[in-house]
Amino acid sequence: MTEPTRLPERAPLPRYLAPVPKRVEDLGLRYAWLVVAVNLAGTAFGFWYYSSQFATTPAIMWPWVPDSPFATLLIALAIASWKLGRERPWLTALAFFGNVILGLWTPYTLLAFADAYDYLHPAMYQFLFWSHLAMVVQALVLHRITDFPVWAVAVALLWYWSNLVVDYFVPVVGDAPHHTVIPVARDAPTFLGADALGTVAVGEVTFTLLALFLALATRAKTCESRANRTRG
Image: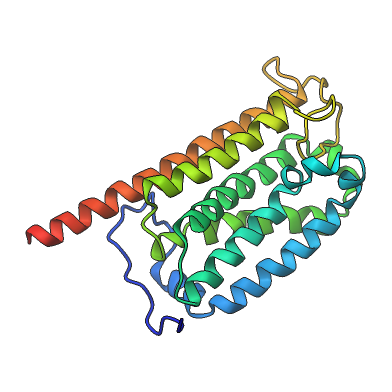
């Protein structure tokens, strides 16, 4: 397969679905291989960052442990597939879900437990915060390379539903949930009567529902735009 030579058309989506300026979208797509390389570097760093958690988690559950680096790996693979002329909607949907969910969940967690993260060097704290928000930005460009077919969204939802289950509700293997380690005890009180585990769980459930809404709304608005062009 040859690489696409022209940038994909930008559908007339509402701003809440396509908030990234077209100029920035075009820049990211034009330098897609650089975006792939940056995400692969982030993936390598992320797997190193999770190395201590791998050591205490049964090997069979490892795929559910490195949430953020897995998300950056997915988007690297999705963009590389598109550049090679073989965009895979299920892979792009997985990348979208992962980068929206983890790109928001990590800054949310860093803010919710800011005092407990005082062991992090300030530069590392800032790096984790802003690099994860950048994951959301790149996710919001993926509408340019896919139209989010419903079956692909279902694949992504199924995977991230399973991630929610083993992270917070049913560990499946072992006695403890498999969520990313947080800097306080799971039963530590936080706010509004919630404990720490409940706080991070609410965040991830909320961001999963947001990713689902954005993907299906993008699908609906894209189909609506195509129908309007056909009638016109």
